Image (cartoon, rainbow, N blue to C red; front, top):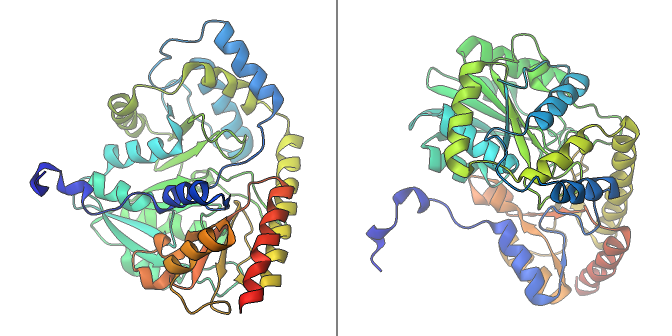
Length: 392
């Protein structure tokens, strides 16, 4: 087949490195600490709600932009937790996961050649999202050598200009676990208001917080609800990454309408019975979120201890469920070579750090581990990782 049979837009990015590491973990019998999905069941109340929905006839199309009772439950939760009021009939779009919400938003709002600001390291999907929508990404670096992974305010100010259409803010952040501080978000909001720029926030880890960190939604700041598209999903909070139910919220009818149109022709709609189950999840009591965060903190601390014992220099996340680990004390290999050896010879899969940077050299000394796993899984991973120390 000749090269000109495929579109140029898909030639500028590769398949997902994260999903490739999952395949390699399966191939080599490895423990998958690469892809961020749990190896434990979601809450039983949620499974029962999905089963009821199937039995009660929710098996045909829901309204394209989301079942009415799910949008109502979502509006209530967003007001309660984020402090932002949305009209469920006009401002909320239910999507096939946060991934589709981000793609629909980029297609709806960004014209080819528009500039979109992202912080790096960044979740690997943002690059392909930009390529498919025609956006030009501008990068601002997070300092991984400091505890809160700050960015340089001057660097952010320099990338904003009259061509800037949007900024993507992921908090809590994948892959570092950074939780953006209110002062940082206020700085971002000031720039958005000054340059009339839209913000797109990826908040899928909003309830997974540690060490007293607090989640602040950018949309809750003055003047930002109508210029911020807040994206989240059921996947991480309720341990149902395979359900693919997400949403985009923005307090502006025109922006929300554009996202709905893009979403409609991308996927038509998310699974109807799982939307009904989502109504139950969104009304879980506050103790559910507290207990979940405590559980993930135990897992985080277990894996941090194991990595340090072996000789990694891990960063310490304040949110989400990933650890970026510097492996230079263990090997002079590049990150891809090291990650491939780790899964093939040690039996633990991680993600090469370069996949989270536009310049691969910036991630050369890191791999990313995910820990949404049972504690016994992480303990077995620790036993396998201990083999690395024997070889140094």
